[in-house]
Image 1 (cartoon, rainbow, N blue to C red):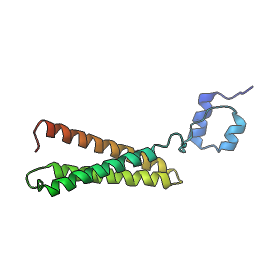
Image 2: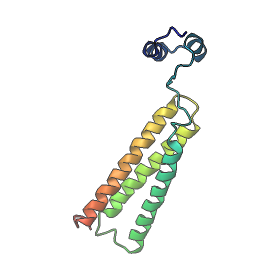
Image 3: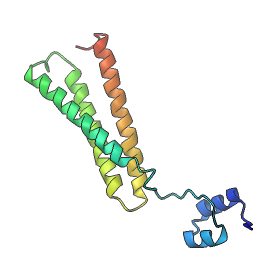
Length: 136
């Protein structure tokens, strides 16, 4: 019979950084969420893939605007350049999250996730403003 209370055991494990071996000998068959990232929770490859696709989209928009010489009369190229930088940062932090073997991988993944979300919001706002003919 297991004498450990699950909530107390998880609190002790998280609070005092008890090693896995000691914890598993004390409380067996207890689902544990550690601070280290599991492969199933790793969203960095998906973020890297999506952010690099949006990076290509921004590059295509910038190239098209420069080709048709619309950059002088429009704010779209400045907004797209901002998206380009945001998605580049997201790609970089997602890659660092995949390659990192330390606890920093969680920080890198969080940065990649929030910067990707920020890029999506900027593209959404740019599209709405363009659709409403506020920007040309």
